[in-house]
Length: 178
Length: 178
Image 1 (tube, chains in turn cyan, red):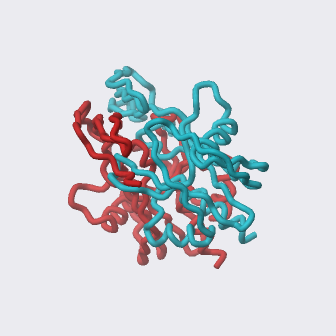
Image 2 (cartoon, rainbow over the protein chains, first blue to last red):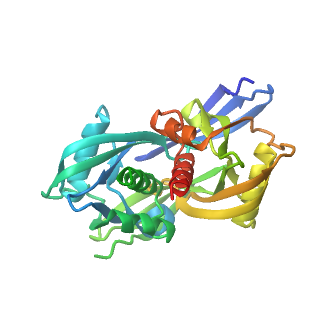
């Protein structure tokens, strides 16, 4: 079966700072029509930063959409034309002040492809050196370090509930067990 | 530091089938103002379904936002007033025809809380029995089963790149190794 859906019409609804919204009219595999609401979002990067003790660096940050302060791995949006690794190095430095001597790509993934094209590039950073933080002007974060095993436990206690952080911590735990 | 942001104003931009969009004006911790673009999305469920051979049941589905056919674990939106476990049992049955004798909650998480409140509830389903599929009228999926280890390898080969699927498969692999 041909699963792809041809776009018959595309209507822009909103163009914002972070997201754009459009509604596409599509031709379904059975030749009927339907609509798809699509949130366009720039790609993002996220970093599993592990220090020499095996502690992971996390940030506490208020997230308006869920009205909660969440515990997450450092992350941020890519600048236009920027390579993902460069974005990851920049975001880690801006949010936590840290630089890392060793960088390893974990994977790239779609956060929730049913309604958005947001793609995240995950990196593992080790060999950390401290420095000055330079947060974005509307970004307020607190830095928290903890043993990787504790962060893994917090996933299943419902205290770490951000998708990119869960993927990154699961990866680091699996790798630590090898 | 108080990280929470008080909402000063909330403007509805779009009310759709799957998403709503609003723009909130917020008071930042430093008393300046900013705006937050928020995508409202109903909660969803996703299911790691493992058969007695240890194969995982996946679905191939076209995802308009990324213009790709993706390999994912079965998933779907919760109906209004529905309990997450009931949604998960319904979605597994509708998408794959399968019923399961054993259900275990894995975790709940936010797919990408920087811009949406979408929450996903993940379940592990075992003791599978086949039945008739009943897909949504604008949903076209192909069912694919494969060894869990193969699905795990596909994550790092970039052939499984959906967030909920990566979390679920990593969980099942970690559990299988215990």
